Length: 168
Image (cartoon, rainbow, N blue to C red):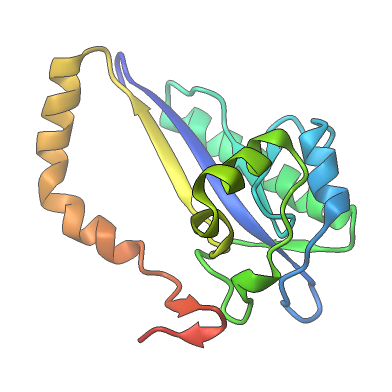
């Protein structure tokens, strides 16, 4: 990865470990807002979610090691309120109508700006940030990625549920 960097953000649902039901936790969300849920754990818009983020990595081994650490921190943060984490785009039975907003200026601003778009879905994702040295390299990377875009799009369809209903 000469001259390139990687960073990974992962979003997780908080769930009851016995039932798998989505579970809001202001305890976990508030700890994340205060930076007390672990050095890599951050709040998300809903108190039923949390996010982890690696640092800026320069090797794949570093990314792997940091992902192991951030995932362990996410599980530990959830366990402070008797919960665990679920890595899925959408929860199969939850309703976005039950979303409880994390009490932080960033999320209140998002709701003011985007209204129903911000509160009408309770989705999680994985974001891979790739840094390259210059614009020409960025264009070359995107050109090389083009044949793989249909496969990447298909992989993102991991949770065909909305508002507790199968979407087909």
